[in-house]
Amino acid sequence: MQTLLLGADAVEDHAAMPAVIDAVAAAFAADARDNTIMPAKSYIDLPQYNGDFRSMPAYVNAETWDAAAVKWVNVHLDNPSDHDLPTVLGTLIYSDPETAFPLAVMDGTVLTRLRTGAAAAVATDHLAVDDADSLGLVGAGTQAYTQLEAISSVRDIETVVVADRDAEKQQAFVDAFAGRFDVRAGTIADAAGCDVLSTITPVESPIVEREWLGERTHVNAIGADAAGKQEHDERTLLDSKLVIDNYEQCTHSGEINVPWGKGVLTDNDLHGELGDIVAGKLSGRTDDDGITVFDSTGLAIQDVAAAHVVYENASADGDGTAFSLVDTDTS
Image 1: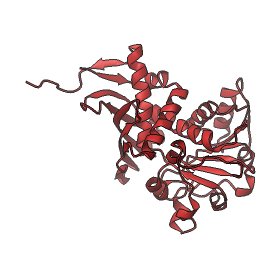
Image 2 (image 1 turned 60 degrees about the vertical axis):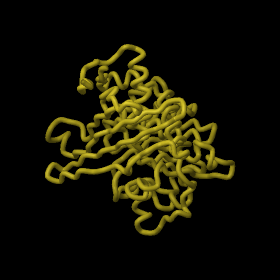
Image 3 (image 1 turned 30 degrees about the vertical axis):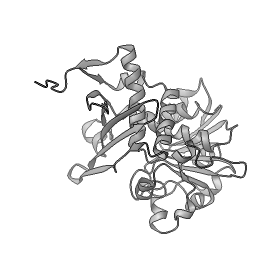
Image 4 (image 1 turned 90 degrees about the horizontal axis):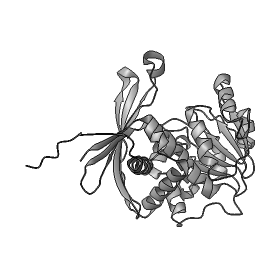
């Protein structure tokens, strides 16, 4: 048996967004039914390099498929300036849960971007108004591109407003999508007034005011991924139907972590986890709902789901580089 090596281009080529969205939705539902195993994310802090490593293992039984994987990912803040490397680099090992054979080793950086977009799309599908046709984006980095690709797969997005303090990034985003959408650069307030808003920034103090949001805006809060980070006004979190991806992760490092730590938010302010909505255990958007918020920290089960799509499609197409990674001799 051989292991399949899949680089960034191969991952992107074999991860059709609708299929990734479906797989991620299935993983959320499996988690709600206790058909997943997902140990807590573990950290190796390396202050001498201004970075850290994170280990994210998981198993998913989605009824029609099951899979296991572990992602080894980092955040090294000095990489772009000191080493001409991305801040985040990821590698994923995708294994056969029955035999533990490593079926594939693949790029985890593109995979993370894709599954994060897919998770926002799943949340948008369940929490945004059905006729949502405008999307606001705060942050014009790589994830903004994936947010638009994913969310436009579940809603008929026509108008896009992107806000970013880097005017070059902002314009590059506008230019990239000008032929497909009515897309323009705007302020954070402009973006916040759209039917759907995704915020993808590393800020530690709120930058989106409550009064800027539309009466029925759905918010995907993506940027807060560590303790101390927060993108949104506490009033927004208190006023909204508030949905999280995972209780332990969100209270520790999600959008809600700062107000949670101060006691501003409690269990009573949470509607529940997205998996319970996907599985039909909790309601999604109802006619009585105004603002909805999805606090997305990113889960290892999402990585497994996306990797499943990539591996199956790459195998079917005969793509990737097969190589002998482990000794399988039993003699």
